[in-house]
Image 1 (spheres, rainbow, N blue to C red):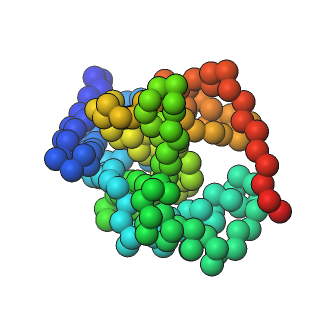
Image 2: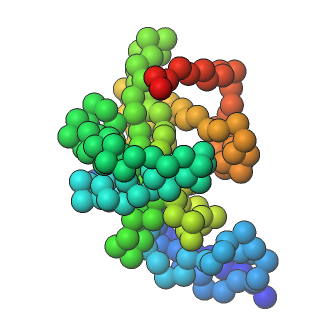
Image 3: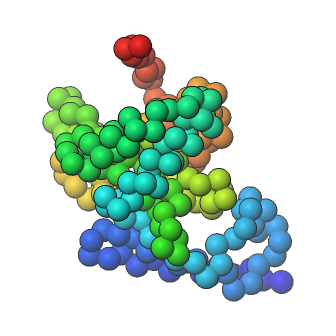
Length: 191
């Protein structure tokens, strides 16, 4: 049996990618890494709007619990997310939306590089709802950011940090062409 997978990509003028994945026929093994193939669903990658705040807040609370077993103070996170929407110099959220529901998000923040005379986008606060993992949601978000960087002469690259123990995330980032390079991150945080 021959397998066919059609991927239609439409680039809208607002830099919003619309991915439509239609699985016409497939052998079971072609999708062994997918919990459930995206069949006849539309996924939109777009810049987040203030109406997405509640989803982003819930994602951040869930991520802190999943990755660090840390229960964040919800009112603080609500204020932190709102601060990004009220002051775009702090960052820009992007979301993945399927069937009108936000299923993943990330935040880009800005680093000025005097070495490159341009801005490097940092990706942080990445979250994909568990039932949508292993469906290329992060890959689509990342490729949206990568295309923005590639088409803008003032942007020089993309960076992100990942917990040392999150080896599955490391594999995803490497698969997308990112490298660990030679930098190691250090931090100091006020209690």
